[in-house]
Amino acid sequence: MHSPSAAKGVPPTARCAECALRETTCFSPATPEELEFVQSYRSGTVIIPPSSTLIRERQTHERLYTLYSGMAFRYKTLSDGRRQILNFLLPGDLIGLQQEVCEAAQHGVDTITECSLCVFPGDGLWNMFRAHARLGYSVTWLAAREESMVDDNLLTAGRRNATERVAMLLLHLHRRLARLGLADENGAVTFPVTQQHIADALGLSLVHTNKTLRRLALLGLHEISAGRLRLINPRALARLAEYYDRPMQQVPLV
Amino acid sequence: MHSPSAAKGVPPTARCAECALRETTCFSPATPEELEFVQSYRSGTVIIPPSSTLIRERQTHERLYTLYSGMAFRYKTLSDGRRQILNFLLPGDLIGLQQEVCEAAQHGVDTITECSLCVFPGDGLWNMFRAHARLGYSVTWLAAREESMVDDNLLTAGRRNATERVAMLLLHLHRRLARLGLADENGAVTFPVTQQHIADALGLSLVHTNKTLRRLALLGLHEISAGRLRLINPRALARLAEYYDRPMQQVPLV
DNA sequence: CGTAAACTTGACCCTTTTCAAAGCCCGTGG
DNA sequence: CCACGGGCTTTGAAAAGGGTCAAGTTTACG
Image (cartoon, rainbow over all chains, first blue to last red):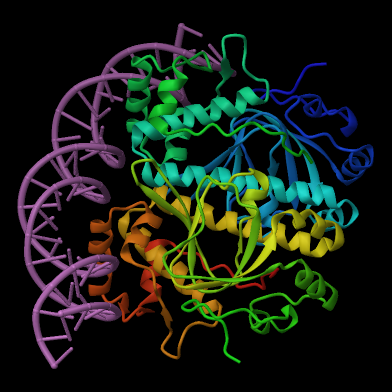
């Protein structure tokens, strides 16, 4: 059995109780009944190719997903093509909750790598709240955590300068990936994100992102090569970004 | 009976069933049992003076609030004082949910005007999910809606220019206030927000915010005077900001 | 091995920031 | 009643951070 990764789209196990994600220490354990319910709620799994659209901006979409493996992102665009990435999605993230609220998705979701996901019918959510309050609570928990992530990104885009923004993104993504157990013995993580993604996430131009990234690499703070990111001087990066390391805690998984 | 306003801190009614907010058409109706539960869950009400701190950044806080009247905002700051306003809070908004997730508040909440709020003990939330799934679902709904608001602000701060940002903020706040029935016959709404608030919400400097605001006013797009905002040419503002008017829908209220 | 995507780098320009100072509004106190 | 002071707004001038344009280089992959 291989563990799911952020890089490739490994299909989810047939039975939720044997979900490889749950075998990590990242997620809070669920009771057998809850697993049973999630299993019955799940309508299937999908694998989506890299650089493709899972949810189209401004279009009604009646499904929820849990990202099982691979990497994706939420974004919004303006009519002239300007794009803002709202946050990156990693295994365990719940996708599509906002559509429950405003019948049309206000943001798009695109994959970066090939992604595999568990699919849930959107209209079953209310049912879940009724049948398993704990799972409903978990959904709220996940929603609040994602908002907190967007809050961070808004502070970054609104008030940090280019250097601080890049340092922030590197640190934040590395930390999230490492937490999922995706770092190798050298502390390097798979990093399929392009500079265009970084620019769009930080509200910078591609060119300036490149120059800033270059500068930080030259200063010996990090290294990106062969699709992997390694933080050489995380302390310096954290100082730059004023990165507050919140204690890790277990995250619910639906 | 006077209706709650965004300007002053009118104390909430003693009984939730007679809540003046619920008498508007903005909020989805609740059953008597739900009202009963909310009433018993509520531990009291508070009135907070203008320009004061309700929740301190990065500090544990064990309470939830529903804003009943007045105007406030969520924000984050960097050590050198740079501040980013994440979103504005208006009557009906739920405050403090994120603290349930990451035991310490990652953002501060300050009042703009005097505010009155209903107070709920944080540790009773889980209980609510269990006792009244519908209310739990409402909390999730509110969380998702707030996230969607922060998403919008991130797009604005990250990818719009100064003019577009200001147009966006004017439209968005006006719309939210008007929806609560706070617009007078001329379509003007109480607008206690300072230019510093606007600057901090948009990720601009105070000076540039002023100049941009001035330009739009000179162009005859809006007017701010005597603490009231009136949109003179909302169409032009909407065109500038690429503002998509989502249909109004009823919002849950806890 | 060739082509397209992704990354680099330099030069120039413009939007926004910073600095500085004055004007306005309003409540307080003499 | 009017002077004083603090917060908010307004304006101008100069500086800079970041955007845009253009072109070259490297990498990935069919």
